[in-house]
Image (cartoon, rainbow, N blue to C red; front, side, top):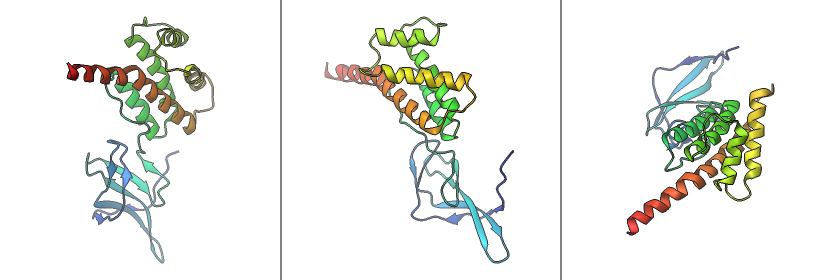
Length: 202
């Protein structure tokens, strides 16, 4: 059932001072100057249900409820990682965007698929089972020290998201995005920076 937001959106923009939020599109800290407000005129007073802000950097709209407990889209969890192959970068950002709209199960499934993509970019054969790719990453020393348990955690949560009825929660999604980011830095960003600095020094 679709949740209906009561009230009417005001066509005139209202000034904003001293307010900021993390934009769910460009991940910048946005300090908008104006907002659109959804209001409902009651018998004794006008109630505000929420506002739409336009990010000064990317110019895209964000809804934030009156009490601030809901932001759509929400902030992207995790950070940008440099030197990623295009398909890997796309999938990692997909996991982050899924998180921003509370699609935690989809976020976890993207992280799980990402491990397979990472393995293939490093030489693993395509079309194998997930366990094959975990073993590949471990045997080829692409996993950071003491991280095997984290990979098993991604496997477990991915299996739950695929085969079990209960949905993945926000905490699970946060954990997996953070580990995935760390893995991508270890596999791609650090070697990329080393190569970049080596070229500069020659």
